[in-house]
Image (spheres, rainbow, N blue to C red):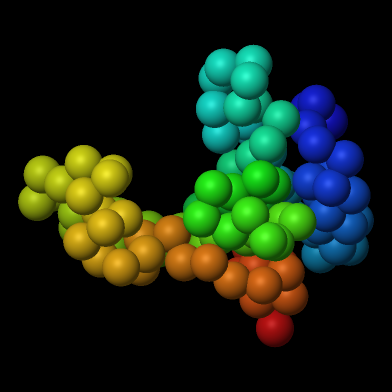
Length: 115
């Protein structure tokens, strides 16, 4: 397991446990490379369906929430990249449809394809 904030670690433990029950392999990596931010968020990817999302703490736009979950819209991202958009433009121009903020239950269902 990678070194992350304890809140993220707890969520990852539950997510990994559910993934193991469903025989799903998850990949988890730091969102940022720098030491200042690398414990505050992770990218979680389901290897079998290529769905991924972000789990983060101390999110600037959501400081009142202890932990945030974001689902990644792969199709919209690919479209934006093909059209030449950079990530900041994608996030502002598509009103957070590239990374959609959600709650823990829909996040787990999305990552695990388990509804």
